Amino acid sequence: MKSIHTLIMLLIISTAGFAQNNSEYQKQLFIEGTDTLPIRIMYPKDYDNTKKYPVIIFMHGSGERGNNNEAQLKWGGDLFLNPMVRTKYPAFVIFPQCTSKSKWSEYNKSSATDSTGYAWQADQQILRPLQLVSDYIDSLILSPLVDRKKIYIGGLSMGGFGTWELLWRKSEIFAAAIPICGAGDPAKIKSYRRKMPIWIFHGDKDPQIPVSNSRLFYNILKHKNRNVKYTEYAGVGHESWRNAFAEPELLPWLFSQKLK
Image (cartoon, rainbow, N blue to C red; front, side, top):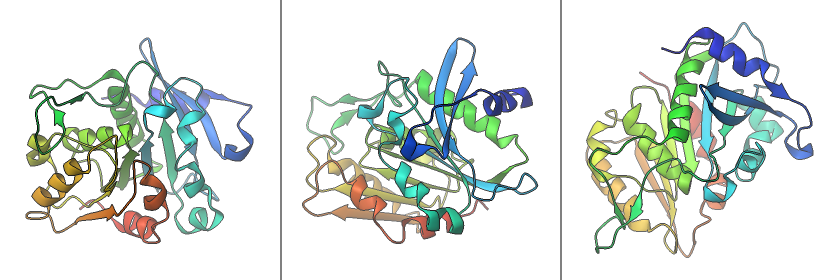
């Protein structure tokens, strides 16, 4: 169990010089041993430290890796900055950043023709960047400011892989998930919380991450989870997150979910 001082450290280790368009996202560092996870966090509008708020953690794709604590806001940051969104859905919005030489989840392209396009290890070990995200979430849960029944996870591309993995590693934590053009190990679906609300997005012309994996996940999940949704965009390539972020029901659906 992570101690309270870890969360306090998060709130103290902030830096100035925010990017102009993302000034509402504070720069913070989650430090654990010799490892550091860069984080951008936006506090709820009209923040009141006597209230509890939902939390959404969103993981970026491979192109936004690094340690500048800037790039991870390239996709999705503007969505939550929208003044109407901030007013209607006050929440802690968190974008962690993965190091340039790693990734959120371990996966390899399959050399065989199969239904996923990827080869998965049965004893898959969690990679350090995702472990840091997991431990950071554990620290957040200790805070009296966090509504534990409304913690949401999402990610695009490489972050979609991380989303699927955290869903089976910490299934009991999340109220809902939005994996976008990602992929995961179908063998782990049995570890997902029953009736977990999940909205999957993918473009049918994605040249980088085969849509077959998202289709497979949906076809397996829909038979035992009436809370799973799937949106596939015809003629759309890898950047299906643009379409997902434009869905008018995305945020109303997400923030309506509550852990039971």
